[in-house]
Structure formats: structure tokens, C-alpha cells
Amino acid sequence: MVNLKKATKATVFRGTPIHHVPEYDRKVQKIRPLELINIIYRLNDIAGSAEATGMYKSESALYKPLKREHAVRLLTLHPGASKEDQISCALIIHNFDKVIPRYKALSYVWGTPDPKQQILIDGHEVDITPNLYEALIHIRKQSEDLTIWVDALCINQENFEERSQQVAMMRDIYAEATQVISYLGPATKNSASDSLSTILYDIASRPYWTRVWIIQEYVMAKENLIQCGSERFTRLDLWDVPYQYEVLMGMEIDGDMMSQIARMRRVLEVQEEWKRSQSGLTLGKALKFSADFAASDRRDSVYGILGLTSARRQLKADYNLSPCDVFQRAYQFAGRENAMLSSTCEAKQIEDQLETINEMMKTHNAGRCDGSCGSFERLVQGF
Image 1 (spheres, rainbow, N blue to C red):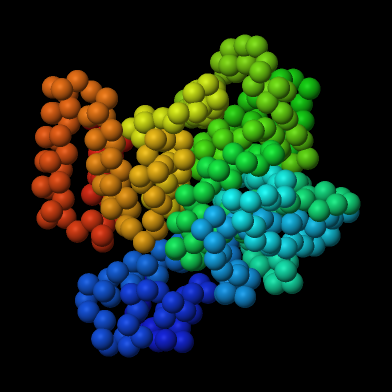
Image 2 (cartoon, one colour):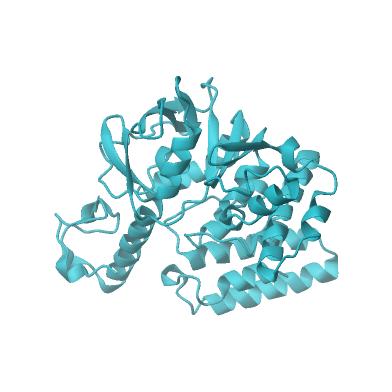
């Protein structure tokens, strides 16, 4: 936690000077008590973002501002003849509204930040997580550049405004990629097996299928590639094999593994539903099937699935909001959406329920709440 008594204008917290936080008055002694609480909340949020991405250095020199509304950065991953060659990259800004180079997109689990690994981006030394380092090592080519979008590197995670704007575009970023590479981690003897059931079991057991962001990333892909180390599998290799789930269910599986398989299957079923309709799920339905997927930032429990829903144009990702604020706004939207799809009697009950919650929230400071008040559970429970 941040101790603001020790803070000065020169203080740098995880690479972000205090005077870069919007609420900072530049004179600590002039900060009112409520503003002080908000600053501490924001500083710890920034720290959490930096820790999750594994990027700790000051990044003002690394990230040039995205001046256009639909601007994105693409990562040029330079070739490496061997795994020992240092990872070297370049970030190039493109306007997503215009013609941009063909690119792939990476989907992976951020994982723990330590031990940090170092790469070069435009000549800058940047620390990244072990999981991302391993993914880049295995997806880069030996003799030519690879253009790819990687969330932790292509978004300045310490800039809340940019982060919010880019998250709103992620649905289109993954949809327009020529291929989405789902990197599940290192190869094992099971992922390299000749037995389809053994391979499926290994893939289903990976932590990848527990992360909320992968739902959108996997579902929106034009073409999916599953990769474990250097082992690569297409959809045809795995999911289009008849009786695949019967194969898995015929094996000895404990309760945790059964839940893991169920999550994986839900992702694949949502992708099939999306390909058939492309009209978007209701927010309530999306929240129910993603409720047991994890997010390092609680707000991403909502933001991570917005791109799949009809709410994506009305609810915008905003990381200046507290988790409780995000959940409450989603609750109100989901309630109104359900009311429109319900009978007159049911709609009246939903409206009454929304009004009851609104009255309750008037005495609750949602702006300072991390969601521990039960707002997320209420959101998932629905109407």
C-alpha cells in the first residue's frame, strides 16, 4: 500500500510519478481527505497494473501517444535463429480505420511477474513476465519479422485513458487478426503424445481456460491456433474430431478437472453461437457463463466480455471507475436489458428490484469500494 506521508512530487511509484495522477494537486498538504483516499486507490491500482504486466520501467519514452481515436500499436517481433538470441522488437502505430499490415494476435495467461525477463523494444530494455517471454520465444520466426498484437506490450498499461480506449477496441483487434495464437505454456510429454485423448486432456488442464479475457480473444478469431511450446494444433486437429468430449469424459477425471473441461467447452460453444448469429449475447448471459473465469483486475470480469455483448456500445471500459462502480453500472444495464425482453409483469418486478438497489447504493460509497460489498455476486445472480 502507498504511504502518502512519504510521497513527494519527485516520488516515482512503479514508474509513474505522483504528479501524473489526475487527482494530485502538486502540493500534498492541500489534498482534502477524500481526494487523498482516491489518490491512494489510484496509485495502488497503477502498481497492480504494472505488477500484472511485469513492466516496471518508466515508459514515457517507450510509448508515443496514440493521437487518433482508432490508433493501435502493432509489435514487430524480429527473428531469432535460436532460443538464446535476445528478443528484439519494435512498436509501430497504425490507424485501425485505414489499411494496416496483416498481423496476428497473441492470447495467453499473464501469470506471475517474477522472475522478470528482459527484452528490447525500440532499443529500450523492458522487463516482461516469464509467460510472455516464453510465448515470444516460441512464436517468433527464425528468418523474418512477425507482426503481432500483444496486449501487455501494445497498450501502455499505466495510462488509464489509453488502457480504457484500447480495451474498447480489443474485440475488433482480435477479429481482424489473420490468426489468434493461443499460447498455453510449455510443451509436455502429453502435449507431444500420439494419443488424441492425452493431448486433449493436457490442453484442457492448462490455466489458459481459467482467464476471462481469453473468452473474447478465442471467440472472435478468424482462425485459431493452439500452441504449447513448439507444438501447434489447429481447430481441425482438436475440436472438430467427433466425440472429443466423450473421449475426455471416458477418462478418470476429478472435480477440478471436470470444471476445467466445462470452461473450455463453454468457450467453444460461445464461439459456435457467435459464428451463427454475430448479434451479440445479452450482458446477463455473458456474465453468467464467465462468472467462474478469473481476472487480475476485478473490473475485467465485466470489461473482458463486453465485446461479445449487445452492451459494448453503451458500456465503455473506464479504469478510472472503482470495481463497485463498474459492477453497479453493469447491473443497471443488464436489468434494463432483461426488462425489455420480459413480459410486462416480469419487467415491473425487475424495475422494482433496480429501484431497491438504487436506494441502497445511495448510502454506499461505491467510488471507494473494491466490490467486496457483494456487488459482483449480485450482478452474476441477475434477475
